[in-house]
Amino acid sequence: MTSATMGQRPDPIHVYFALLPHSLLLDWAGPAEALRIANQTLRALGQPDRFVLHFVSPTPQSVTSVGVMLTGLAPLPDTLQHPSWVVLVGLPGQRIDVDHSDARVLLHWLRGLRLTTGQLELVTVCAGAIVAAHAGMLTGRRATTHHQHLEELAEVDPRCDVAANRVFVADGPVHSSAGVTTGIDLLLHRIADICGPVVAAQVAQTMVVALRRGPNDPELSPFLHHRNHLHAALHRVQDAVGRQPQADWNVPAMAEMAHTSPRHLTRLFLEHAGIAPLSYLRRIRLATAEAALQAGHNVTQAALLAGFSSDTQLRRAWHQFGRGGTPSQGGAGRAH
Image (cartoon, rainbow, N blue to C red):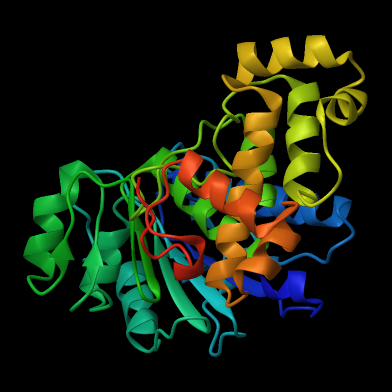
């Protein structure tokens, strides 16, 4: 559970996009928009912004990969506010050129950073991993990059464990993604970590992005399953169920939220989400119970938090949806 769900007001995360001349526009604009929309979504839910965006560079103006000139860029800061993320993005070309003054200034700045999980973390998009490798930030870390730069990454830092054919990779305070669109996937994953999966799903819906797999799980979170559609009424119901799975939901209550009849709502769920309404509800409740168990709650508490009427109902759903082991094991034996 996020600190926000525990009633504490968390510190905002300062996100520093470090831009060199000709930085690939979509590498940083897409992730930045995901964070902006996350803030917008949180405000709509009555919660404070979680992300403060900074665009920094060795020079106050810089040309992008498509020729648009950026002005008013902030200088590379002497100190970073914590918690912070530093985002490095790709550049055009078969190899990443760091043999110029702006790159040398950026690399010097990067070498002075000390990455610490939860305090100062690194995010790389596409060939931004190559820049990080030149700064020695990936030594001893597992990371990925665009498939055209995998060999270059291994060459620049032989002690980096280069992962091929991955959407993104998380290793402690280092988070790396493979390409333009996977940068958005990575940021959605990070938004889910910080703000919860419901907020991440709403951001993805707003951006009309088909959600991708995470770094370790072969399946999407149940909060994100059955959301790859554009039906606004269904998203409204799914958002409400995700926010309050413990509420007294049934098909008529969901239909009222969608402003339709129970029979029509069932048809809409089957047609657009590929699942019946009550099956979707049980999946969300099971995911909520799993999160509660992993946070240290016992089975009775997890069942109550998730909206199950009893421990027995939770155990029945646990086995119905193919979870391994038992709920009392906290999901450690979960099957995929």
